[in-house]
Amino acid sequence: MARSDRAGGVGPRRALRISIAVAAGLIVVVAAAFLVWTRVARYDAFPEAVAAAGERNPDGWYVFEPAEPAGVGFAFYPGALVDPAAYAPLMAALAERGVLAVIVPMPLDLAFLGVGRAADVIAAFPGVRAWAVGGHSLGGAMAAEFARANPSAVAALALLASYPAESADLSGLPLSVVSLYGSRDGLPPETFESSLARLPPDARLVRIEGGNHAQFGYYGPQKGDGVPTASREAQQAVTLDAIADLVLSMHR
Image 1 (cartoon, rainbow, N blue to C red):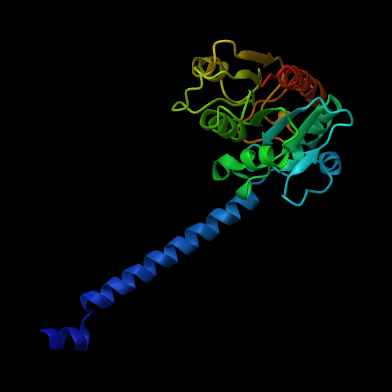
Image 2: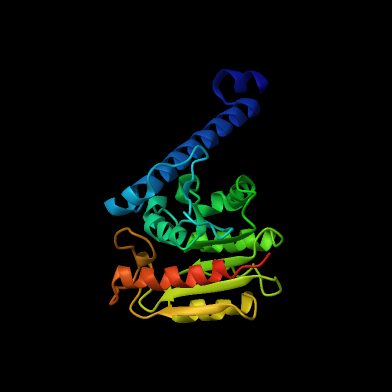
């Protein structure tokens, strides 16, 4: 029987090697397809946002230094598959209020692949007395996860069209929180309202009338989003005021 296997059949060891090779090949194909998808599905920033972003620093971040520092910082996680530069106008305006604002690009533009990256930002600026983290959509959810895992490092959290995962309970943390959403977001208002149960009792929920999901950044229409009735500039102005009030009132 063994002679027959060697002559015309496939032995168990060879079959195992073939199976491993096929599995490895499939993994490579799937990984390549996923990588291509993240590039094809990416939302590019508008030219004015790219201009406002300038060059990344040596760590790969977009850093907006205030002319008159207030001693507070804000680390921002971009939304899924959104060019990080799309948030440059908002962060540049925040820096004009005295806040050190840092956009933290993510691997493949997916914040769940870089949840802990705010720690490097915080460590790089030891002169900042208090830090807030925040983000848009998936970026906000991952910023909330960072705040949950690092309560001693973060004093405030800003969520833009975002909310903590159902498994992430931040309600008992000494954390100041503002959560903003547009009334024309593709997600129902109840999604954001119900998330307050997982946030500290004094968390502030801000509904932007006529705003939508994509207008928290400077990029084009987003799949599944609602059509806004407020201008991008109006939505950005409300967002800027809310984040600035949150961050500038931090005490740590």
